[in-house]
Image 1 (cartoon, protein in one colour):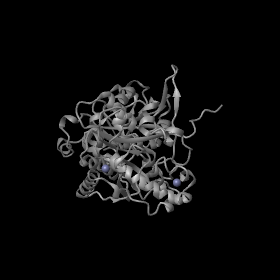
Image 2 (cartoon, protein in one colour):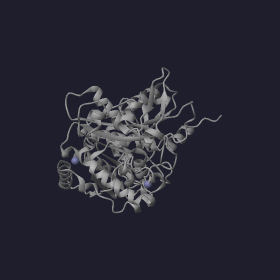
Image 3 (cartoon, helix red, strand yellow):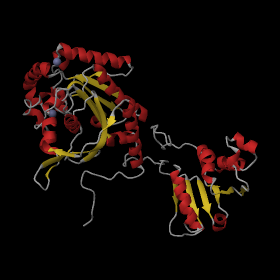
Image 4 (cartoon, protein in one colour):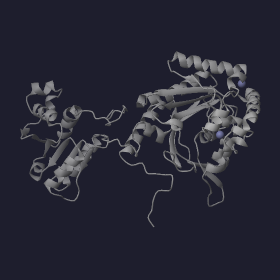
Length: 475
Ligand SMILES: [Zn+2]
Ligand SMILES: [Zn+2]
């Protein structure tokens, strides 16, 4: 039997995996700056956590959850989304200081029909802010999402917002919508024709042409908002406008989960196609904490689908883009002609000085090692020869960018005045520095200094090729 990853899952391998690492790190940095701590929750929870939060009648809970019993017969589920887990965690820890602001990233699991761009194990980034009713937190959350996507270089973005009201005003609206849908029942798609009563709002979210046509002219939620809900929504719009974040009010934006109240939002990009163009979204869930057994606590959050985001950046494995992602390209290749001892020490010294370094294994010939060095695309080779090693020296040879690196190496070994022009101290120099035929011999104790202060900063900064993205490298 040939072993493969399960249907609907995949390995994320280099170089794409490096893009993921970068996106996640940038996200964490952005959230940390805004006071959102990192929260890690288990990937499985008591099944009830999701039944109560996501809603027992939803497709997610009924058809898509990975449920299992552990060896002592307890019922667990792999998390299909993160908000439920965050709320469970909030209730369990009862933080003394509000708001409780957290961010997360990790795998989620849904047993969906496998299709392009959809996975059964998929990844989300997101934030949640619990304990604030003030509309300014809505605007903070939305702007963090917006700014993060802008920073990654996503273009043609549209922010749509809506208000779903609260328990008070929603009832009137749902009744009106329900009555409207009854008059259109025969025109709805198969999935919704007989399910209007369960949650009439979900019909508005349906992507089939039938439902879209049939719900033209449906009553708009906005007209049913009570005064506090309307004031809240107006404040969100006003503050977004004041921040210069463009948005459209989309009365049809309802989102798929039952727990949303008041503000909902979604950001899509024109660079992605059709129904799959949403990059991230979220909204308020003011009733959820209480529903799950906690104190009444207003809350809001968003999540981003990592697969789609990476694909929007042009890096999905199906794309034809040639990747030259230089975070995986070594800067230095150690060519070992002295059989490991000094080369091992040097390799360790370089990586501990935050340099990307590579070498060859298996005592191969000098010729074979230089071939590997070229293939690795490293910029600089450091050659450890037996004779040089005996004199505590190594040879530094530029492989790429010779025209930049050679003059720098040369000036490093010259007079103090020249060295000063390169920003070096006289003590950085070595007696007996020798430059010949495009390489230089240098003391093994000085090589880190030469690399760190002179050669590596001179290398051109690489970027991901053939992409509109601006994820800079080496920043
Ligand atoms: Zn439908
Ligand atoms: Zn209301």
